[in-house]
Length: 432
Image (tube, rainbow, N blue to C red; front, side, top):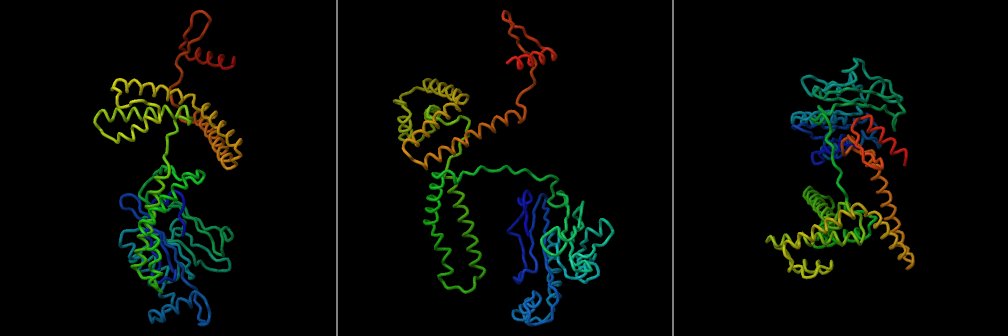
C-alpha cells in the first residue's frame, strides 16, 4: 500500500496495523484528520482454495501455519473471513471509517464474505459501484466470469466517483479500481492545508557542510554508544527477536533521528541572502552586528567581552568599549547605509569576487576548487535570472501609476488623467 503527495501528512504510522499472524493477509494505513476524523484504508487478500497438500500455494502455507502454531484445522479461507471481520469491527467500534480493497477470490455479491461486509446489522459497508450506479461489477479477472475484487467503504464517506477500468490498464491480471472521496469526509477538512517546505541546511554540494554534519553526528553516536546498542541483541545470541528488543530498537531509531536533525542544524547557518556576498559587503555586515552587540551590552544585557573584543579587532574597530552610545548609533547608521548600498549594487561586487577567485584557482591549477567556483557562479547566475522572472510575474507590490512628470526641457509638466499618463508612458518607453 502506498500513499503519496499531500495525503501523507495525515498518515499515522504508529497506528498502522497488519495481520498479527505475519501471513500478510491484510495491511492497513490510518489517516487522522481534523475534529477526531480518522479513515483507515485496508488492503486484504483471501487465498484461493487448493486441496493438494504438497503444493506451495498461499492456501496451503496458511493451512500449515494454523496447524503447526495453533493446532487449528479450520479452512484458511474461513479463518481469514472470521479474523478480518473481527478486526474490521474493532476499527469501526473505535469510530474509524473504512475503505477496504480486497481480492476476495469469491463472488463479492453472493459470497458469504461479501454478505458479512454489507450486513446492516454488522459492519454495514457498501460497494460504491452498486450504490452509485445500481449496476453490479462485471468479471474482474482477465480469465474470470464473476467479480472477485471490489472496494467496500463506510457509508459516512461521501464517494463522488468510482470506476473499474478494463484489464490492461494496470500491472497484473486484475482490473483497476478508481475511487474519489471528498476531503471533508476523509480527513474532516474541506481543503488540504498547505505545508510550507523547510529549507535543508545539509546540501551535499557543499563539502564543508557535509564534513561538519558527519563530524557532529559521529560525535553524538559515539558519545551515546548507539552502535553498541544496535549490536547488543546480536551479541547476546538471540535467535528470535522479542517484543522488548523491537521496542528498544524503535526507540533507538527515534533517538538517532534526533541526533541527525541536531547535526543538520549545526552544519550550516542559513542567511537571508538579501545582500549578495562579497568581501566589501561582508565587512559592513559584520561591523553592524558588532555595533548592535555593543549597544546591547551598554543596556546591561551582558555577553562575553573577550569574544566581542576579538570580533571587533577582526573588523578593524579600535577600542570598542571606549565608544559612547551616540558614537555607536552614528557608526551603526553608517553601516546600515553601506549595507543598503551593497544590497542594490551587490551583484556586481559578487561577480567580481567570483571572477577573482576563479582566476586564482586557475593559476594554482586547483581543479577541484575551480569546479566548485564554477558551480557557485552558475547558481548565482540562475538565481538572478529567476529573481528577475519573479519580479515580473509575481504578485504586484504597488498601486498603479496615477501621475507622470514630463521633462519638456524648460518647466516640468505633471499629467494626472488616465489617457495622458498612458500615452506619456508608452511614448517614453518606445523612444528608448
